View 1 (tube, rainbow, N blue to C red):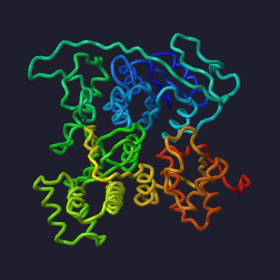
View 2 (view 1 turned 180 degrees about the vertical axis):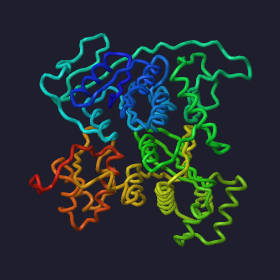
View 3 (view 1 turned 135 degrees about the vertical axis):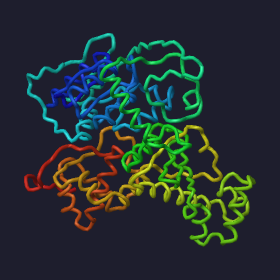
View 4 (view 1 turned 120 degrees about the horizontal axis):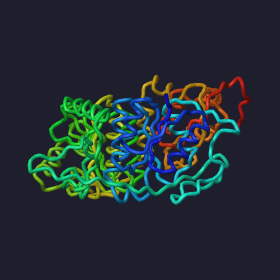
Length: 472
C-alpha cells in the first residue's frame, strides 16, 4: 500500500515520487485523473499530490473526490499564471489541504504533505535511488536550490482536451465533474458551458462519481446556494488565507441555518462585513458603543431598506452621526467581530463570489486576514483541538516561504517572544516551561494559528529532557 500518490503527466511526477521515497514514504505514480482515481482505490494513499493540469480532469476535481471518498490529504501544484487566468479554479484549489505554485521547493512540499497526513519523514541512505542532479529534459523539471537537500521544481504541462458532441437543448451533458464555486465573468456559475469537456472512463471511476453525486443530491442545499462547501474552522481559515494570498476581490458567505454572514474582501484584506442577525448589525454595534441613539438605528435602517443609501455605514455618514475616523474604527471592529464569530460555528456552509462588490467603500477600511485567523483560532478552538495541533513533544520552526510576516500579526510582547522562540530546537513543552506566565492555551493557539498561516512548520518530535533548552 502506498502512503503517497503523485499525479503528474511528466518527469516532475517521477522526481517527486523519488524524493518521497528518499524520505521514507512509499510513493505510487499516476499520470491522468482516471489513473489517479483507480490507483487511489487500490492503494488507499494518505497523501495525494496532484498537478492542476491533467489531460482528462483538473487536479482540484480529482482531489475533491479523493478527499471526500477516501479521506486523503490533497496537495495541488499549479502554474504561477493560474490566478490571473482562472479565479474560480483558484477558489476551488483553496478549499483543498495545501497548494503550491510552480516553481516550488521540493522539501517544503514534502514536509507540508507529511505534516498534514501525520506521516514521519526519515532521510534515506546514501544509496537511495534518487536523482542526484536536476533532470535533463525538454520540460526543465528541476534546478538546484540553495539548500543541498532541496530542488526547485518547475514544469510546463501540455494538456490534451477531449471534444465531446454538444448535448441537445434541455439535456446538458454531465461529465460528473462538480461545478466551480460561483463567480462573475467567464468563470461564473451562469456562464455558458465550454465546447471543450473532459472525458473519463467507466469502471471504478464511474462508481466513485455515482456515489459522490448521490451523496450530494441528498444534502438539501439552501435554495440560493451554488457551489457551497462545508464550514469548519480550518476550512474557513484556509479560505480567508486563499483570499489574501491571491489578492482576490469578492465576498465570502458563511451560513448556519438561516443565519448569514458576509465578508467583503478587496486586495487581500477584509474591508467590510454584513450579517442578517439584528444583534450583529453595524447600527446595533454603534448603539452599544454609545455612538448613536435608538432612534438613529431606525432611521439608518430605513435609509437602507428604502434604497436611499447602499449600506448602513453610508447612511450613518450621510446623516452626520459619526465623523469619518470614528466610522472607520467602527466598521473595522464590526468586520473583525463578524469574521471571528464565524470560527465559532461548528457546522454550516461557505461559498465565494468574485463579483467585485467589495470595491464599494464609504471609508477606507483594512482588517488583515492574519489578525482574523490568529484571533479566531485563539478564541474559538477547543482545548482538545489545540492540544492535537501542538502536542508537548512537537517542534516547530519558521517557514521558509511564508506568505505573511510577523509584522502582519497584532502580537503582544509576550506572544512575540513565544513566536521568536519557535526555532526548531524547542518542543511545545519547552515553550510552556520557558514562558510560564503565558497560558498554555495561548501558546498552543499561537502554534495552531501560525500553522494555518504557514508562518511556522512542523520539524519533528522530541522530549525536553533529551536536550538542553537554549535561551535567547
